[in-house]
Image (cartoon, rainbow, N blue to C red; front, top):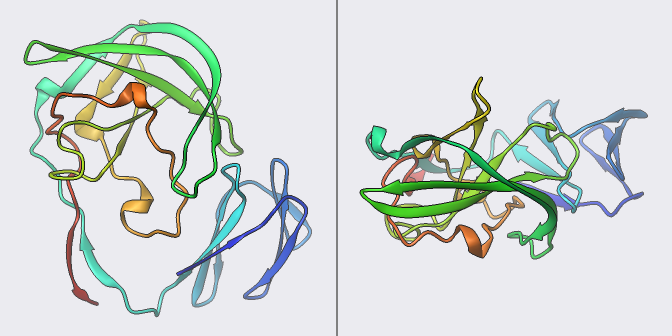
Length: 210
């Protein structure tokens, strides 16, 4: 795997394709495109536009470490249907590629685990390819870096009565848990939970080369 970062307006030729980074996407072989994955024979080209346009090249024939995702057992105590306390504001979040990424805070979600209260902000990343209604929570908790990866994400879905489902059983590791070539948002400090969220994806299990 390799990563090619493209400043806006620059072009790269990769495995039979000409790719240019635009303000709001890419131009691939002359056609405007959003973030997506392109098949290129042995390779797959993943177009990423996260305030840091890049092409991640995946090689199907390269040796790889065996990495197996693992999950905590499902626990309904970590699923909440709550109101969104609206508090919209534009802000930036850090990233694993050391460049801030633009986002909009939609508001706050409150819950409690075994009587201990918690609160997280729901965000929408302001980047090409992100749906207008998208709401995500990027968080750390007392298991981070020990039982789970150093940070996790969970998508928040709206209900018919305009509340939101915050189900930590659906929490997942970002792509950077599996490769340093990805650019992942870092949870804001407000989403550093003191409680343990023993739900969702755990630390992946790693084996030998495949």
